[in-house]
Length: 507
Image (cartoon, rainbow, N blue to C red; front, side, top):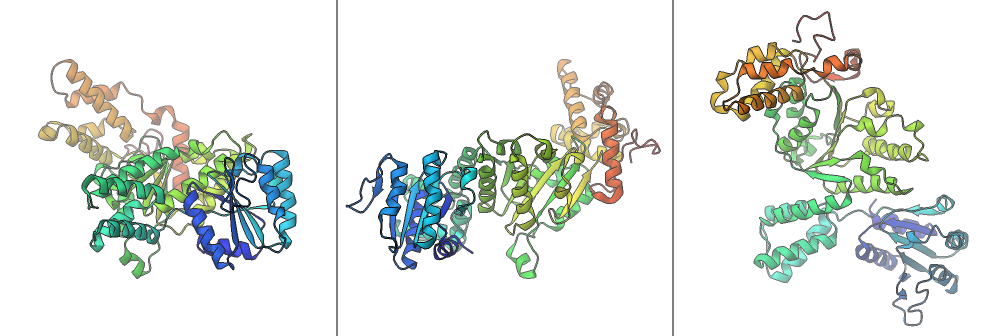
């Protein structure tokens, strides 16, 4: 059900107080006005703190700088007069005891009258005493059809026409932006070269990055890593490659649902974050990185609002990859956190969305400590698959050395003994292997020569791998994966030679 249908249903059902969280004030007011016409030309009254009520000459300015008076105006109109009262930025006043009390009184009164009070605000702030009488209605960002109408309107004003493919690309690149931002960035493009061009997609993407940065929740992450940059993890890579075309229209016609996502659990430094970046690059999808810590803002109610904003933005940008790094740190032991249940509510909203989402948002969550994750997170249906990413085997370590050295010294890769390097670094993670190469480069650079295999081995001999310092944690992860709780990302199982003492070598 779209916004207009749901809003009109609430009007007919005489929901007295409706709260619409959105930053698109102009667009939501236009949508409300349209719904008012469908409901027998209901009168629409708009109030804000600076100008009071607007429009009607008899009531212009009434309630200026007086939110309580703005509510009293609702009672001034005849009980049988159908009307909608839009109160802008009213979230700033609902904490006041007189305003809160007046709203509850109106909620009783309006059940028997064809009037509705609509609170339009940029964020949700609802005191506990109003939670039972206020209904929150989400106002989505512009849909592709809305964006196309806006672009075509601009094209008419410039006397220009665009081919289907170029128009589709512009529409897709604008998804996730408000109508106001779309108008602004397209006006900038037209002002630059007097028409819209295919290259304007880059301009729109930069505007999108600005928008996402301003939310302070999501980051528009550049994804340049390739699947080939991942050493080992063959089971995981095969799984991803099979789903490369799963976001296409051909897949929909075949009957395939959109891929939901995956949870990568395992040891630090084994390539989980690299995999998230490589997925987005390989599938040619935008990569959004969620810092879960930013969801938990200081004000009561703001965390839940930010979570809904994150979901709305991700779905507006779909198809996309949503990367949630170290999700275990955000939701570990939330039952015992003294935050008035904020973490629990945020988790509930997020987990429900994971289970019920139908939009093509592919979620890649990474976790180092699966013990800290709530059982609901690991239940089937949240993700398409849960992979265990363990320590690389000897063969995989060789591949990891090859990836890094090919990038750094492609001209003399053969001068490095990859077999020896892989054999002499048991239990090293991919991140630790990369660090040994960097340290070897420092050794060579300080002596005015190129670094060698011996330099890498010397650096490795001075490093204590995580497999030794976090032996119990790694053993738990390996036992957890061996019990069938997760699919192995590597064909070799990722078992540690020193931790699993019964195995002679890591491969």
